[in-house]
Image (cartoon, rainbow, N blue to C red; front, side, top):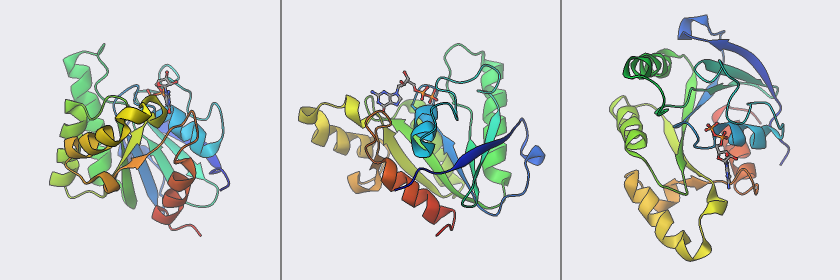
Amino acid sequence: MAPLRMKFVKSATDVDQLPYSKAEIAIVGRSNVGKSSLINALSNHKKLAMVSGTPGRTRLLNLFELLDGGTCMDLPGYGYAATSKSMRASWQKMIEQYLLERDNLEMIICLVDGAIGPTKLDVQMLDWLRANDLPHSVVATKRDKVKSSKWSRRRVDLAEGCQLEPNDIIWVSSSKGTGIDKMRSLINVWLGNK
Ligand code: GDP
């Protein structure tokens, strides 16, 4: 399947600064989960979302436009260890406000590190999304890092940690390209693109 053609639109600190979108998906996960690598793999563009982040942009709401229609929000990674409590609280507020107030938000893609399973913060995020009845899908990253001997157990454990069934989880590897085509077509479906 062809890469998603994506173009950076703008960075914002507040949902009110964002332009109208007919349909949007958002990608969220803790820092280092592989979010930038996934965006780059989906678009086949090495530096679209700078791997490990452009200084200054990693804490903002980064909006991308898909040339086939709709937009993709790259949300700041949560749980970055080096930040202060108050800074973490202000990011959380920014992310939560965005998720609650953004119009036409069709799907929230929650990334979980497939090599380590859901963290406490990932589970908190999933609980919060469920409590607020927001549409979301869990995507496990770094599939290639799980040894084949551990794979079937990990698949079950990760799903259980997310309170889901194994088949509910989409597994990807941005390095090897696993699951990337599937993600591209799901994104097109969520955005209502043909
Ligand atoms: P972000 O902070 O969520 O944007 O995460 P990055 O995309 O910067 O990735 C964090 C680290 O994980 C980097 O060292 C990546 O090279 C690595 N990484 C990301 N995706 C994969 C993957 O699919 N497989 C492997 N083996 N490493 C990955």
